[in-house]
Length: 241
Image (cartoon, rainbow, N blue to C red; front, side):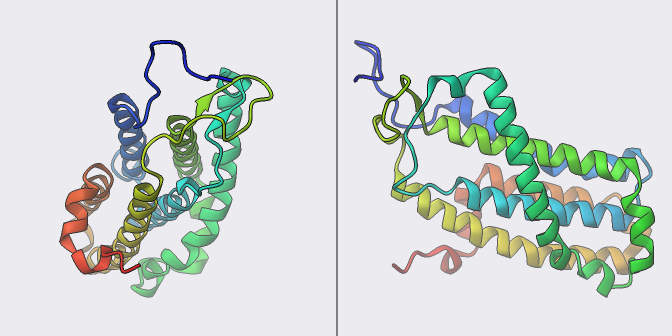
């Protein structure tokens, strides 16, 4: 059963509009921790914990969107309904948020090791609506990003069609190599996050407006130009298999 219309080529790569949407969602996730920090009088520890949550969401996104050979290439046409897509985004956001919250505990430890906060401050911090609203928005942006990634590599078919009926969109092996590179980049960024925590703990208010913007710009750079990011540490991204 054909899935494409006559005289219309079957897409083999995600279009530029899809790439732009993915970048916009990534930039939104990285920018959200800055909003309470700069506009809602947020604290340094609040910013660092939200940033640790951001890094954890990024790691979950890499794992969740890495394609396997057995992944479906065809979806039921009902999956394209708006209610279905919104439900998928919500479910993905809840799942990513729960796992990322667990992962962010060890990632956020430098904020405590450098004396920026104590465990006794956490209940008050976590009870602030601005903290939870920002974290919830970040999870929704990540869920939307994962759903968008799924939609760009699948083709709507007809009801009852095999999940592998449509051709593979893009280069599956190339995507897996890029996922490995993205995972390595994320580990590198974790080390940069430790440096950020150290700088904020030592320079305090003098780095209040400077360091967070630089770190957000670094995260955006990794997402928008991964080709350039991979050249910074070529040995780290070299596929030895």
